[in-house]
Length: 320
Ligand code: MN
Image (cartoon, rainbow, N blue to C red; front, side, top):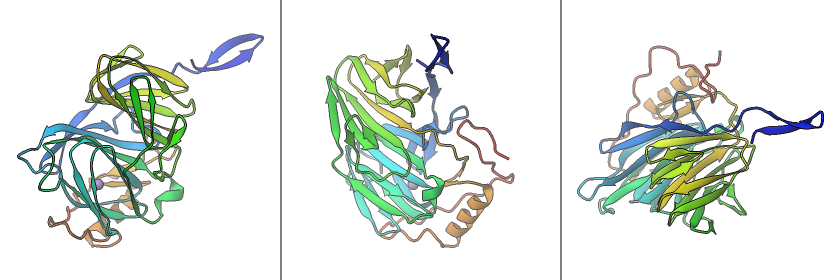
């Protein structure tokens, strides 16, 4: 597929074929009761568009357990996207927002310069927890802005054959999510009822990745199952996904994000000194505000590494 140009009356392909690279995730404990599969960042692939952090949790049996219990903690420089297949999470933040989220709904928190929140399954919760916790890096023009919180209970959907596309953020096909994003980006849940090929409509100026929340899919001869992230690269205007049966997939995409980043704990910034300032502000009770209505004490910031954290571009290359 590559980019084609006419040369002496013939057609040459400039640039490589779009990549298909399966990136295996790894398990990370989160809070006291939850283990997640971290799919981004990874060493060879730190971002997909402005998506800079992808955690897939569950399905976990939480019938006799507390479910997700993440006490108040700060964020800067990013948006959090919470998306559930099963379960319930109560969000509280330092703006005073209190919002329960259930499957099919979007909680979108934009940290701007700084916000704090807690995420906790209520005492009486559904027996299974299953979802995605995603971060989107804010570009320079938006990262110093005011924090805000949005809840979207009704997201637009389009159907094609056996597949249902729920547009969580950005635009897909003819429909657009109401979520306020700061860079060209898309996030779509693809629900498939049966076996068969599913056509995905893509933009050739975006890069994409696909993950399986449940079920399996085959793309470009690569088998995708829960626990892996299939990076699809740039330069595609469509692709075909073959499923063997019912599946719940999630498509992440966006314009390649060109700003080098540092990521540490819950912060996305541009250099080590900004991380130190954010950590100091949280520890001193500045900048991020207070989450009210959460009985658990705020999380203390971990110690920073002794060496300075270097900014990296989206390919993982350090920047002087
Ligand atoms: Mn958080």
